[in-house]
Image (cartoon, rainbow, N blue to C red; front, side, top):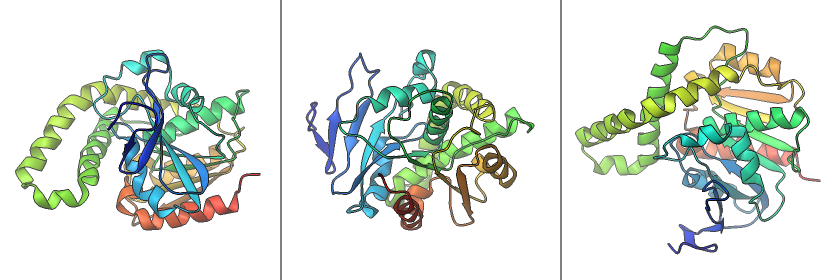
Length: 276
């Protein structure tokens, strides 16, 4: 892959280079045509995770996938330079054209929530008129939280992310190898990532979401600890602009593992909220 704007990987095109000035952020554009959509990946993930959804929505929507500082293998030093929402605001300045819709997964979905709340409080929405949050984690301010339970859930999500991203390649690997890969991943990520995750989780219920007017679709699984039924109800109450859809068949990585169904729901929602 050439290290320049215009370089491509799996038919995606990099349209904004990482530099020291922009915090090593970069932007990748999906192949195909359609209305532009901004996509924000989760913790210890990659812009590449949006490929299944982008390909299923090709012809209707074209994705700009951000490579965020909480990418796989990061040091988490980025947190000293701003919240996830502030990093998202910086990334928006790198887009080569206006976008009407933003989609976020997991920690990336919380970055969208953070940014929307700040914009509702007097910031700029930069033309965003619709949002989709896939498997966000949310803790209503009135709820109690167990750090131990949250740690268990965090470890489970990180381990699940490894197998979800391996996908069909799992069949070619010995179970012991996959287990060793997971142990090594957790050994690195938990000490660095969990404090950042937990702070954002606790802070999520204190965001000023009541003033957000952007129509927002929330997708999650009924068995996903990131958004239990009571916390989903809390999010819907705290942010009236949301429509929360919980499906028994959806996993935390449903945009990868149930991509056909997620693409259908996202496509229908975006069609109902077209750009002006």
